[in-house]
Image (cartoon, rainbow, N blue to C red; front, side):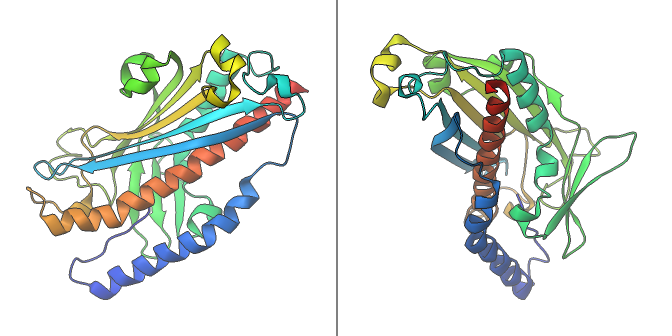
Length: 285
């Protein structure tokens, strides 16, 4: 979520920001290559990325959902291509620790120059309150403020995706990062009134290997499913503060912040997969 709105009547400012967004799209694919890990005995490959988003015009509440299907394989050992059960991979406790740390560190990921081209930075609010501010380096405002991450122990109940539950996934880790404010968060009757402003939710799902997948590699299930969501009562400023949300405001939000958020999550999912591949290599040695 990177788009920084200015005065609604300042069309030149809005056009300037749209041009910046287009520049990010043009140059990001080349920059993404620097995040990719080299060929290795163990590979973590994202096979599918899915996303969806919505905006309730009556309440102004926005939500989104992104999901990556990841398969772990060993290119040097074809017989291991179907399942990770025979690969020397990190233990479940190590995977939980990895997922917990990388999900909790998401606000700092938003400050990567390869992601924002230096348009945003991340700073801690105070030592006593370990929240994070995503700041625009151009306008000098807090784009979003995140609270300290919280670990959800009942992760299986949180993941609402029916497909994940139906195919027998085990939720290893679920982390929520609350949204506390910032320019992109409509805080009317929110922050000071104690009302939920929404959160970012990250879930790591591990799939159990099956005999069916071992004999039919083309139909194999993913070893890992990474799910991210915008959940709760998040109301984007771009959609306007008055409800019901007008049609043009909804389309404006859909064509800007919604698309950019999905793109950022696509990049972030890829970053997580690459980092997990490195973790697998360490366990494989």
